[in-house]
Image (tube, rainbow, N blue to C red; front, side):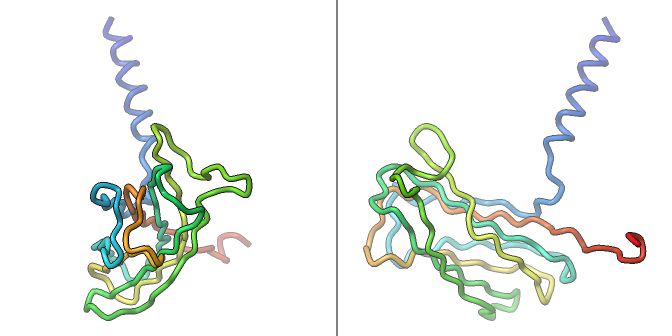
Length: 165
């Protein structure tokens, strides 16, 4: 009986270790109140980055329902350094439907999730970076937007040309 229990615990530990992604440095969602994203409402993310030499990949994540009335979504992202200086503003026009009209995100229960806008972040200084996300649509209220998220992953350091010769 002890051998079976030990094997079961061992398999569980291997499964847990395999499911972890050690490259993820930050992952948060901001809930949009009652699925109504007001123009001017900003989702703010405070992202601690401790290494100014490490390059990171930022992935914007969006969850929406079929109540969203359009096939696309214009989103702006502002990047602020730890000393609150605006370093970059980017606008994305995200296609939420395929040409045949169905939602392109994955999901269940009527909520679709998209992973969008992968950007390389080379921070110039360590500290807490701030990213603001807001919609740039002409409607004052967007219905059906459920959550906005950001995931930061560390990128490999690069290729060691001496080792790979």
